[in-house]
Length: 293
Image 1: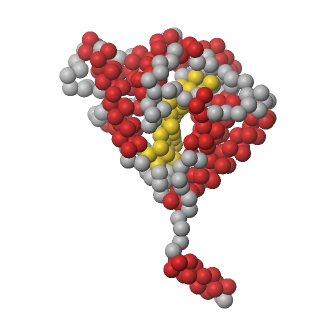
Image 2 (image 1 turned 30 degrees about the horizontal axis):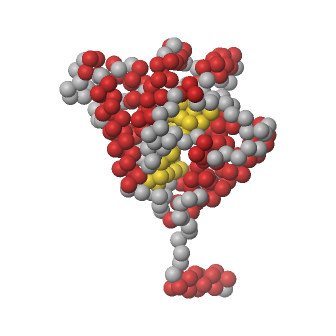
Image 3 (image 1 turned 45 degrees about the vertical axis):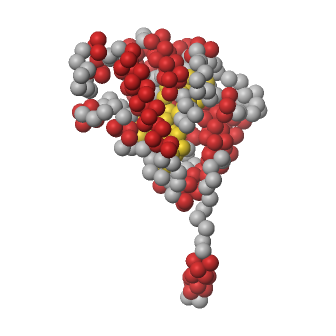
């Protein structure tokens, strides 16, 4: 199997990417069984590191996952993180904003669900929805009732540049306060999305996941690709880089995400809390008390 290197999938800050040049599929030189076997090994190692993070109470680890409909976000979360102790991980799946969420700035609902130190926090869809979906459907911005933004003409290039800057500032604040941030874009081809939609329609156990509105969004495919390209170029930074994951093959995408996480988490200086001599002496007395029962 080919080695997976984080740098091969990272969007380098300052270096513009063209989304059409980014692959949606990659051959690791191994079959599905071998890839899934490797994933099991990697995710166990991730769980071992997360246990140390949880025990030491630092840092917080944020994992944001974006992608077009059917890109495999849900199944990736299930397969990559299934070995982690539930006490040390929180998953949030963001849907249409509520009236309360609309009454605050666009990052607020994401900010209040960020992981506390010592935990993993996974966001299935992220604060980037407001420069993706809202970019395609600017009426959603008007629904937020932002003072001074009264009509569609107010939502111009300057507005979006400001939002990108606000996102960079938000992420920088988190990193400077001890958070480790990962952002994954599951890059799916239009052909593969068509196949997955048809599979949802044909299979009774998948039909519940199908939404007719998804087909309408598919008609904006080119617009979404341009919006994602702008996101990658405007918000991949040294402190919070984007990783573009070829997503046409789900097992391969899961392994790549897991391997990137493992390689980066191994760089952290975390371990189980060390006991003082006084504390060790107490544990010896606890042990003797139990053995003498």
